[in-house]
Image 1 (cartoon, one colour):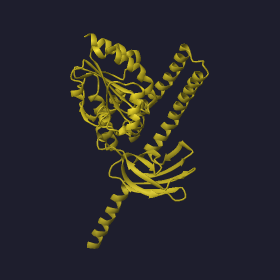
Image 2 (cartoon, helix red, strand yellow; image 1 turned 60 degrees about the vertical axis):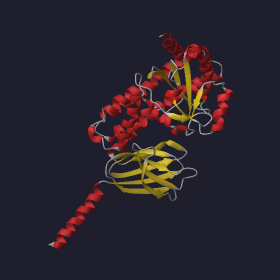
Image 3 (cartoon, one colour; image 1 turned 120 degrees about the vertical axis):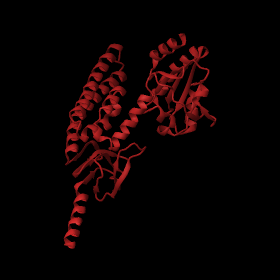
Image 4 (cartoon, one colour; image 1 turned 90 degrees about the vertical axis):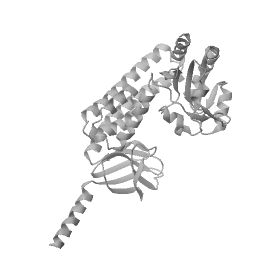
Length: 367
């Protein structure tokens, strides 16, 4: 009887280990196939958590893991190429050509198969958008881009972008009970408006609260809510151009209106916008406007050179940590240029440029 009990216990233990087992068989082709592959979980941490790593031999590799929970993850190669994957029990097969990354496939479990179907349609939308964008560039290069042409191309591009986002929302709404909805939301979050992202994340079912990707999304949404118009400014301390730590609230204490401008020397759109901001500063500085530039540079000499070349005669701060800037994290900055208009200790507008920025500053200084 004792042997029977032990055998039963052992069998139960084996069953527990295999019930949530995931295997991934991968094949990589193309030039310069990397040496290692990693299986990672996406969570609220700054970098995804590695749960397995293997050597790639003759373009092939295999993972075998027992999952505590179903998660959203990545197959990451040692050359920094990553492929999103739903980590759920079952056997997956992955194929990828390094010379045609968009054509990769991961299939074999319900959520991954559904995500593959979604991707096929999404690729059609992005191809259509790319075609319109190339038309815009060609017209610009050939001197054929007048105002009417630009408006017509933009309208078509925006229509495709809306169709794409509608398809994203439809997939999420129709698959609420499946991890594929989280997969789509994680991959497409930066293509959605902040308002739409908040709406979709707030509607995630409670049974997914233990999924790492959900914690990451909720952290992102909390930042969006904290930096929405009407919220108090978020204070921070960063070094100035001389390396001295400065506190934002103290720097701007005597200013009526503040433009908090996230930029970088390597950012083309930022540099293109700078001449307008210079004129704006000249026009309004004596009436109470202050500008605080927060650079996402990593090289101090490049940062200082851009300040000098563009004649940016206002306050400049940076921890020189690039996209890992502590201030950028506080304000949820994922792309630049990004601007926050501050007045009376609150965020009163954001991401305004050109004539819209000029109009808002004039409006605030008149009050």
